[in-house]
Length: 278
Image (cartoon, rainbow, N blue to C red; front, side, top):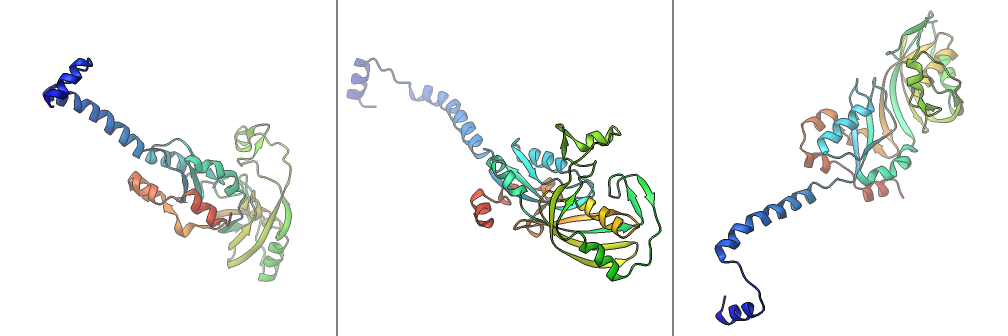
C-alpha cells in the first residue's frame, strides 16, 4: 500500500487490516464461498429418469430409492407398476413433475404370461385363489377369438386391488378391509396384441393399449371368455409413448451409481419435448 493511499484512507476514516490479520479472516470467507458453490452444484436436478423396475418392488419403492440416491424430494412416477411387474417406470424429477400428467396419458406396451384355469382375488399370482376350473383343449382359433373380443374400444371394470380411488381412498386399501365397492367401468382401447406362445395352461402375449388400462383385468376377462378363468403370472412394460425400457437404468445400477452418474442418465425437459413431438 503506497504512503499517499494510506494517508487518503486514514483521512477518509478507512482502516485496512494488516496482511496477517486479513489472512486470518480469509479462510472463513472461503468456507462460505465453497459452501455456497457446492450447494449450487447439488441443486435439485430436473428431468425424466427411465427406470427398469425390478420384480417384487412397488413403484413407490423405486421412487423412495431414487430420492435417497439423488438427495431430492421432488420425484414422482408415471403409471403404477404392480409388484409382480417389471420394466419401464418413468420418474419425473424436479420441474419434470410438471409434465407428469402429460406422460401418464401416453399409450403403453406390455408383454406377459397368464395361466388359465385359476382366478384370484387380485387377478394376478399374488392373490388368493377364489376359483379353479378345468382348462379345455383349446385350439389357436378359440384363443384368438377370445383376444379379439377385447380389441379396439371396450369397457373395463377397475379391479378392487388397484390405485384408483373411491371417495378419495385407494381401492386397494378398501380391499384390505374386506370391502367391495361399486366401480364405474372405464373406456379403454387395445391397438394391437400378439399371441406369442401357447403351452396350456400358460399363454404368452403382448398388448399395446391406452392409458388407464389394467392388464390384470384384460387377462381375467379373456379367461372368462374362454370359460375357465385366468390370472396374470408375469408382466413387463416395454414402452410408454416413445420411451423404451431398452434405454432405462436398472434398480441395481441406481443402488451403486453415484449421484452424478444417475443425473447423467436423465432426459432433460427439452429432450422429452422433442421425443414427444411437442
